[in-house]
Image (cartoon, rainbow over all chains, first blue to last red; front, side, top):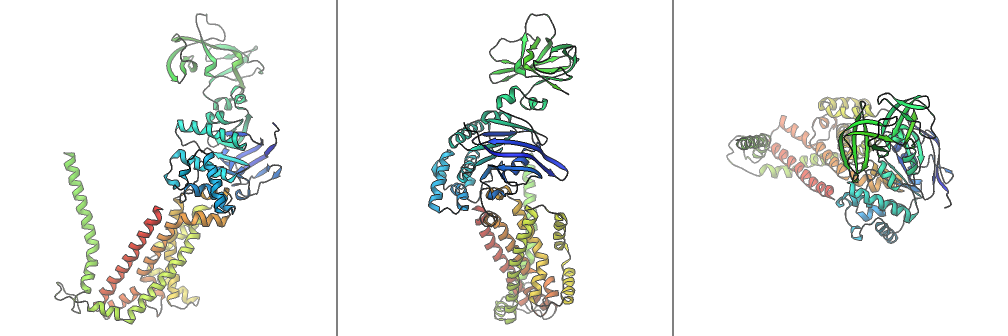
Length: 349
Length: 264
């Protein structure tokens, strides 16, 4: 695949008063890519996307679309378009009028408008009889599809999404995530999606950018972000983890609260900080005597998480999380736990 | 036991509501009765009824002229206040700018001024800047009071829908004018219409501002006042009652149209 940069950000800052909402973000997005920006609320992702679509201008830095600086080009002059979190459908129009609106703005004659709008309805899996239905009579999922069809009718170079699925129920959300991914593949368009939900990001994206406090803290493929987070923030954002405070001592990491030492993860520099282990990387050991790297504790809670079971284990004043496949044998309540050093991550603090 | 009690509560509440309605509307009824009494002075019970005063009212050139003046003023006040209020409400609801809070407060203050004081102040002001006291001056006097109210009404409508709808239209390639024509105006429609209605009715019924600023022009409320303090005839209640009926018709027709607009 010839990867051509479609959108480039160079050291983009956005200040509101003295407060930086977005700080020194540099980013290159490739033509035809599904890129997701994920971060907690207040991380600056909405501010960033507003600058990308042209509803705000950067305080510093440049935004380049196919090599051309578009910092000050307003939203209605950009070949990009966004599906809003609120969807922002026009409540006084029918489904068809909504979808055809970008074509109307462009001065396309009504016949061609309708034909194109119908194409987009089909693409968004909306039946044709919805064309003349008032948009206020559509259900939540149907509205999503109308908003998507309307954006597709615009035929943008880049399609932006500002958490449009956050208000839907789980099943519908999953369905629409898959459809969105399919449409992206079919149309070959560049999609830039923002969300606070890691799960959403993982399912759909080619690459993910994680934001925190106005900065892009890590960019990578979903797997890479999950397996090799570059900071404690990213690892914790990617799901529940065990965090063990450790001090470096003679080539080992000593955890005061648990009274145990651990191996330094391979490739990591020995340092004081936190050792992070995902619950699914923890495992129970039976019958072995307590040695370094093995923790003793007591199971006090268990939760069924679909195909897995999560155990809460009280050990040395902290609570550890351990996950196992549901059908594996029940562990001893007086549990001993261990993990492989290569599955742990060490971050200096 | 509780159901008995709620039943009693319901009954008390209902009686209270009926009582309030009666207290509000009986005076109107008294005016209506006074207007059909044949005798020149109002005595109760009415001995003989007659439509004479209504015939006289419809025949009177003076009253016709006053009605025409009132209608003209109401019309211009409504048009101008809607134009001012639409711009004002959008500035208020859609944009952030320095001094917005002060603007909000300054906008509200004229609504709460005692109107006779406002009328007097405007009279002094108009004469000091050389504005003739005629019905045109009254239009501006009414605007000082009515435009802020209409601004509030339209602003409420503007706050009633998500501003991202306008952003979305722009993002889809609409120019500012297209956004205004296709999105803002239709969505503010019901608010603009209610604002227009309010402006007509408030202007139609206003006395103090007209009294101080209309000079030789006479509006219906002014005519009523004039006849009340000198030269009472049952034409006063007749005109008063007709004026209320006219207002009610405007209101009912207006609300019906507005319901249609809202439902769309």
